[in-house]
Each structure stands twice: as structure tokens, then as C-alpha cells.
Length: 401
Ligand SMILES: CC(C)(COP(=O)(O)OP(=O)(O)OC[C@H]1O[C@@H](n2cnc3c(N)ncnc32)[C@H](O)[C@@H]1OP(=O)(O)O)[C@@H](O)C(=O)NCCC(=O)NCCS
Image (tube, rainbow, N blue to C red):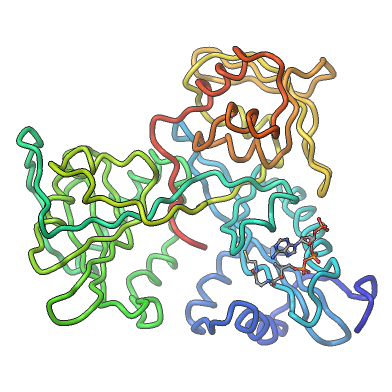
């Protein structure tokens, strides 16, 4: 076994991709279809993929995609979407990921990405690199057999059963409206839509092809699982930009007599249980982190979002692994922020990963303070931070990458 200091790290070249695909398939235990690989590759900017080699063998890889992230208030930031991170089981826990990440993050900074995001295979890996979980996905299971709606709940109608390919333009247009109002929403490039509409057998997880319900202001993509009389309906994409669309789509989903359950992932605080006469029929069966964020350019990123309350604070942000962070004065007035580097005494000391977790409003400063991960002696200031960073629209990742 080579010492990791002997490994070379360099940009991935076209001729490396066969070896990279084999490494990724081995590490993730799944072979990705050639067409899907080509689609994701088309989203990698120049210099955005690095590999580690031991001799001529590719033993590690990491890359980022050129993505666009909506932040609270609707501004959109260029985001480096980190993906396909893997190190061969023959070379693990010897610092290969550290080397790859040092190189990759230097490149991101050089390419002016103010923020990076990823989805984590395991929760314990990325905090040390300044990434914090920034959205929460609850898995909901709705028992539809005895469900009923409260008398006052509207019945707006307007839902149609459609063939997805025939309504692609309208579905994309509604998704655009949804992602521009949803923190964590991501611009979906045309080649990714092509992949969605290709509806490959390998992407179905044993379920049926897509069914789609369409409303003027929302849509649902779902698959049916199971056979005979015990079928369940699994929602894979739910987007509603008005309450009417949300209620109308849920009435339609729940109106399917022959489905025992509807399962869906949604942020905490869904409206659905409040619509039903028996809210217990909506069970939370799981809770996961969704998007993780690492803030490279703290002033630019903090100034990009809007805020729900005024606050003035000096933040001291550490980033031991990758040398980012620093000390920043943040001043929020009338929902807009000004932020710059400062030498002033800090009011709050924390880690870059915590700032990433606060950014979209899915987690509170007071929770991190209670956990000893954010230090601040002023209880009122922590309350103001909670109020300022809250987001009316809950954070939700636009798509997996
Ligand atoms: C996760 C993975 C990339 C780590 O690669 P690696 O080269 O072994 O990691 P390193 O040796 O550079 O470790 C860097 C640090 O992360 C820690 N770490 C690595 N993998 C970890 C894990 N799975 N859980 C918790 N900590 C982990 C190491 O202990 C080390 O910590 P420290 O230096 O702060 O003490 C590798 O195990 C892998 O390919 N796993 C399977 C695929 C996967 O899950 N990829 C991530 C997709 S999001």
C-alpha cells in the first residue's frame, strides 16, 4: 500500500472516466447508466472534477456541478454542487478525501463560487469540512383508507391527470415558479429534465412508470408500488406555489380509493395534517438532512438573502479544515443585510458548518447555543438571530445530485 503522500491529485481527463465510473459503481454499490452519467458530466464546469491516482490506478474522485441555488427572499446564487465523492476501499482512512477536498475547494474559490452544497451519504463526514445540514426532509406516510377533510377545508378542484411528456413545458414552468420561491430550490437544466422525462426503469425503485397530476399552480409526480389490492402511492415530486394548488393536489392523491397509503418527503410543518379530521393518519416515519451548505464567501452569501428581523452582530467563524471563515460584522435592517470583514470583538463564535445550517432558516441559533456549538453571552441577541434567520417558506432541496 502506498503512502498517501505518494498519490497524485489532478484534473480528471476524458480517458479517466471509465475508471472513475468503475470506482463510483464499486463505492456506491450501484452501476449508473451511461446516459445518466453523460448527463451529469455535462453539468461539470472546466476543472470541476479531480481524481487521486496510485500509480496508474484511480483510487479517489470528487467533483462539482455548476448549479443555481435559491436563497430566502428569492435571490439565486451560483453553487458548486459537490457529488460523486468516493475513495477506493483499498485506500480508505488515509487522508485521500482530505487531499481531494483541499484541491477541489481551492478550485471552487478560484472559480468564484460563493457557496457549495452537497447531499451526504453519511452524517458524520462533512461537518469537519465546514458543511452544515441546511434543509430537513421528513418522510410522511398517509393512511388514506379512513381519511376525511374538515368541513371548512376548501375543495378548489382544477387538477387534471396528464401524460408527463405532453405537458413538459407547463411542468417546467411551474417548477421554475416553485424553485424561485423555495430556499434550496435549484435551477433544473434542460438535460436534467430530459433525464427525468426519460423515466428509466433503473430510476423507478421497483415502482410503476410516472403518473402526473397537473394543476395551474402545482403538480405531483408519483409512482405506484405493490400489487393486487395492497397498493401504495409514492410521491417523487410535489410542487405547489399556491395553497389552492396544494389542497387540490392532496385531495386528488387521497381520493384514490385503491391506494392504502401515500408516502412523500416534505419539510417539517406541513399543512396536510391540519386539513384532516384525524391528523394522526399522517405519520412521520423518518427525518433526514437534505441539502448541506458550505459558505465560501461569507459577506456575499449573507447579503444575498433577506431576513425576517433586524439584527447587528459580529460573528467569529472558524473553518479549521479548509481555512475559510473569519470575523464578520453583519447588520440587518428592513430585511436586507450588509456584511463585511472586521477586527471588532465578536458577539458570537461558531463554526462555518453551523452558519451553513442557519442560512436557509431550517435550524435555529438558539438550538446550536444550547448544544454548545455557538457561543454567545447575550440571550436577547440569540433570540434576534433566531428571528432574523427564520424563513417563511421552508427550505427544500430542488432535486438530488
Ligand atoms: C467517505 C469517503 C469518501 C472517505 O474517504 P477517505 O479517503 O477514507 O477519508 P479521509 O481518510 O480523507 O478522512 C478525512 C476525515 O474524514 C473522516 N471520515 C472519513 N469517512 C468517514 C465516515 N464515513 N464517517 C465519519 N468520518 C469519516 C476521517 O476519519 C477523517 O477525519 P479527521 O481527519 O478529521 O480525523 C470514503 O469512505 C468512501 O468513498 N465511502 C463510500 C462512498 C461515499 O459514501 N461517498 C460519499 C458520498 S456523499
